[in-house]
Structures are given as structure tokens and as C-alpha cells.
Amino acid sequence: MKYTILAALMTALVGFAPAHAGSCGGGNHVHSPQEMATKYFDQIDVNSDEIITKAEFEASSMAKMIKSFDVLQPDENGRVTKPDFIEAFVKAHPAPRNEV
Picture 1 (cartoon, rainbow, N blue to C red):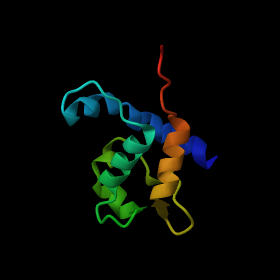
Picture 2: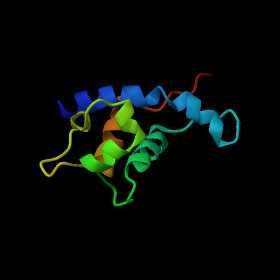
Picture 3: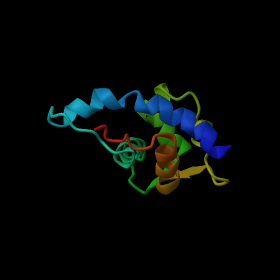
Picture 4: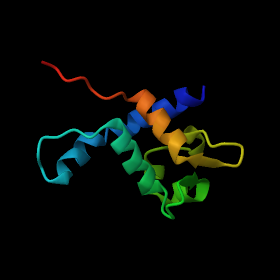
């Protein structure tokens, strides 16, 4: 259940990937799901402690796109860790296969 709800969040975030992809120098390149998850997490985690709190989430621009902190499935202490966030993001958005 935890990953189902977080997968819905990650689907919303991936919608922003094409807009951000060209901002890294303009070349044709693709970011891995791990890179994108790390980028999104780091945007929310303003104190760089690798934990997102409700206060950090609410102060972030992501709060405008995601209606509730609970979508991130915080642990019993009300925190979302970086490894959990990245793992759920990658499960929801596997790397695209190269087409030959």
C-alpha cells in the first residue's frame, strides 16, 4: 500500500521531467529514475539531513503539486527518508529501455 500511494505521487513528479531535462545544457539526454528522485528529494529536503519532514514539505514548491504530505507515506515519526523516497520512485518509474 505504501508504494501504491507513493507511486501516484511519483507519477505526478515525472510529468515535470521533460521540462527539466532540457535545462541541463540543452543536449539530448535522459536522467535515470534515481537521478530524478534524488533531485526531487533534494528540492524538498532544505536542511540536507536526508529526511523530509512535514514542515519541509509544506515549505517546498512540491506542496503546490502534491495535496498532502501523507501521500509521501511518512514513517511513524512523521518522516520520509531519502532511501525510501528513491526506492518508491524507481519502482514507480523504471529506467526506459533503449530501443534498437
